[in-house]
Figure (cartoon, rainbow, N blue to C red):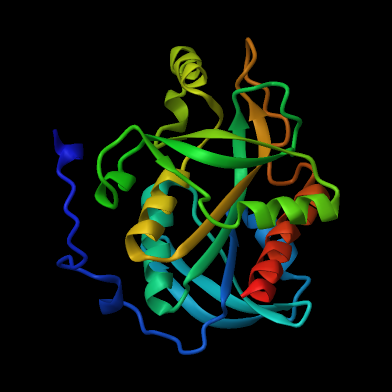
Length: 257
């Protein structure tokens, strides 16, 4: 089986440090989201300084330094889909990022989870390919092994309820069939997205720190698909407030260390 051919060697033929340049004194915490509308709306609130560029075939992806409550953060937009999301963060780790807080939309497999509700994943089902190049084969991978309690403190301080549970990471958003949804629910998944398993695996492999949370979007736990707030324009003010929970977590991490 191809996906069982895990090679733990750290050195590949092409390595991230061959195509990037390290930046000294890179910010202690990096924050990222997927929605361009959300990213641009939050970036506009800062006096941001571009400190790096990530390169891919779809173009340049700038990385900014921003100051939130007098602390320095790196801030960039991640791309949807695990292979490119992981590859770009490989580059950013080579540039100097050592701690990432990532947030994004997800579909819910439990209709009781409210639209834009906060979900904290504890385990990811590895229904994808990228994570198998960074971790031993297995159906699941533990996620958010660090900073969960700190994030719960942030949520309590900011008045946000949340749910914890397993997420289903898949490469194929148009192959989330009714049968697969039922099967994943039986395995314990409460939501579905496209990056979490691989992002946890790459950060574990490289020895960097990673925390991810979601805000609930479309509902798959219904007789027909319910888009709810999946559009980037929908409930944008609420999503901007949710993004700042990542900065609050970053502050707590820096103050505790």
